Image (tube, rainbow, N blue to C red; front, side, top):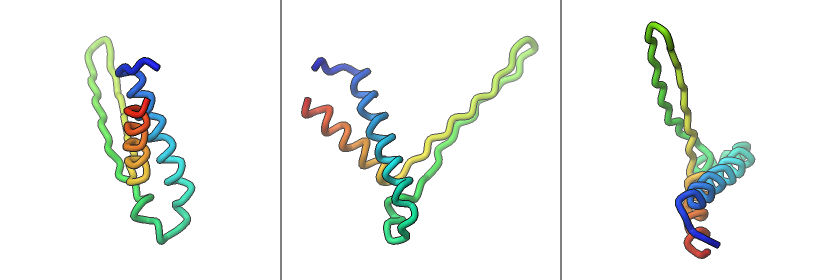
Length: 80
């Protein structure tokens, strides 16, 4: 398999997504709250010109399990 930046991004996104799904599933267990607590990173650029305006809202939710998913995705990518 050919390693490139696009494949690394795909691995990172899949690792983040899998970690987020696991985190969402384990939210009901209070003993695992250190792994499932999420931090939201948001960015909202907007502009209003005379002929065009835009409003973009980007939110990234990160938990310890999603971070572990991304680290394991990098490890798997390097093993290829």
